[in-house]
Image (cartoon, rainbow, N blue to C red):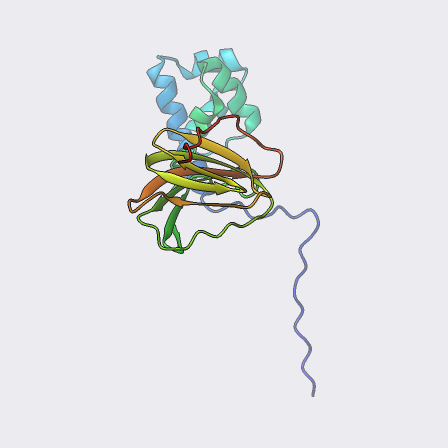
Length: 211
């Protein structure tokens, strides 16, 4: 005797999707919030009913949680109280705007990303405590802008040998052979903005005089 295969019920096209997690908790807080806001303004249910066109019984059921709040009901109440709609339903907390980036350590250099979005212009704070590599110029696509925060930064760009001090900046096309790192034995800290070809910032650096 063969057993009948189990059948998985299919969702009906008009079935409502399940509410996002936490929705019921948010809706449950609307009623007490409506009552609190109304009493803070010294309004009565009868007065609010006259201002909104919503019956007293419906308003009472909303405040007691026996009537599910809807946009059609909350909009006139918000207008009557002269408050934004999110004050009635409870606005979500604002996210932390600070960039909490994990430092990248590579070849003796510590790079702290200062931007979070992928692509486009990227910003880094770069710290190089000491020169640990032989200068070797490289090329790649993109455009770079450097600003020295502390120390002295040596920039080899094609045939140019430039030393930047604190507060000085430089920009260059990365398709030119280039290398940058500490000038001398001390370390250097600087900001690096790297973007696609064509994105430029117009600043200049004073080259060191050749002896």
